[in-house]
Length: 103
Image 1 (cartoon, rainbow, N blue to C red):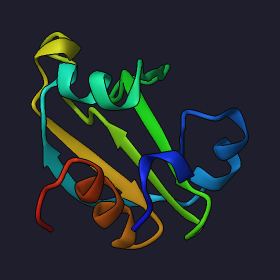
Image 2 (tube, rainbow, N blue to C red):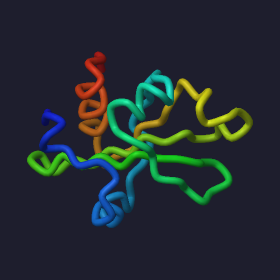
Image 3 (cartoon, helix red, strand yellow):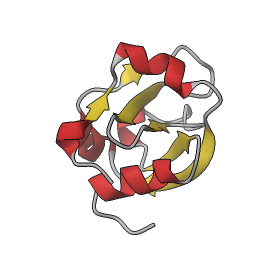
């Protein structure tokens, strides 16, 4: 999987790449850990998701979306379980690789 320098985060043009993504896995990280590695998330105007990070590995053509599904009852800064969406399990591998976690 790619390195951070070939992975783009929250780029506007990736929005079309997120069409038809679905849940592929989860990751246990703090909000602060995500922000430290990926920068500030994009706000989502949805009753089930408040923020997301869209990752795009341009070398491997893999899209991964990290989002706070159904955790709206607590402050987003307190969320520690994040969903990973994508077109395949490679999305989970991409995210886990960035955070040095096993799949």
